[in-house]
Amino acid sequence: MLIQLFLHDDYEVTSPELDCLVEEAWKINSVIGSRMVGGNFGVCTVSLIKTKQVIHLSRKLVQLTLLKSISDLSFILSQLATEPEN
Image (cartoon, rainbow, N blue to C red; front, side, top):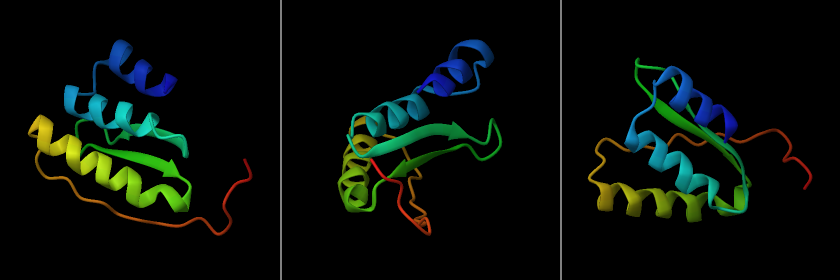
């Protein structure tokens, strides 16, 4: 979360929509990390989350985008070779 705050406060390269998505991801216990990437060039968020919570996070973010009128939401799923220990 510190990196996201740094990008928001010091560089002012985030947006309210991105901040909202990252903050929502951080509310999920199984999220290992979440932040904005890409600067002003095709900006997106990347969230590392334990496999069993992917659907839960996806649903939360879809609900959030509907409430906040955030457009153009898509998900790209990838899996680590091994999931980190708690």
